[in-house]
Image (cartoon, rainbow, N blue to C red; front, side, top):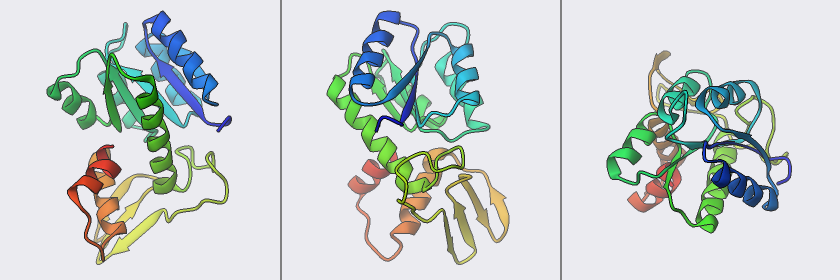
Amino acid sequence: MSQLKILLIEDDRILSDYLADLLVKSGYVVSQCFDGLSGLKLAQTEQHQLILLDKMLPELDGVTLLKSLRETSQKPVIMVSAKGAEEERILGLSHGADDYIAKPFNSQELLLRIESLLRRSQLTNGLGNSGTADLTPGMRAPIEICVDGLMLNAAKQVVFVNDLQIAVTTIQFKLLWELLSNQHKTVSKADLYLSVLN
């Protein structure tokens, strides 16, 4: 656990320091940023297994940061916001967030969401987003699934139909991956909510 790195992008320094302390005590290595521009730069240049991203940031807001990040990276992102309305959650998730938590939140719930997302990321990718084994070594899940002309590559998060690449969101990719991984099983809506949307 001590090797797992989390990038915390939060402009409220008191909350950021509290969260950093909580995460360090839970065994994570934490990098802190207090504005969107420096947060995007760190997210693109340093290796982190997960990003905690505030929605309301100076210089570059969280949604714009996330859209830019998703052009080059599929690192797991939990968006944190004081706005808990359904439309806000949908906006965050539709732009590539893997999970969304509204302030104020329970610290234990946040830690459980982080653990769950890291576990799912590890099982889905087998390899870390950098292309190297940056999570538990020896645990290798398939990184490609091919079924009747449909091919999914988890390392690159791409989908091909008869060798033609089609554009999908992170959530659409996860949904396809879950369905194809369980193609001979019945998957309940609750299980899909848990595995795809947490």
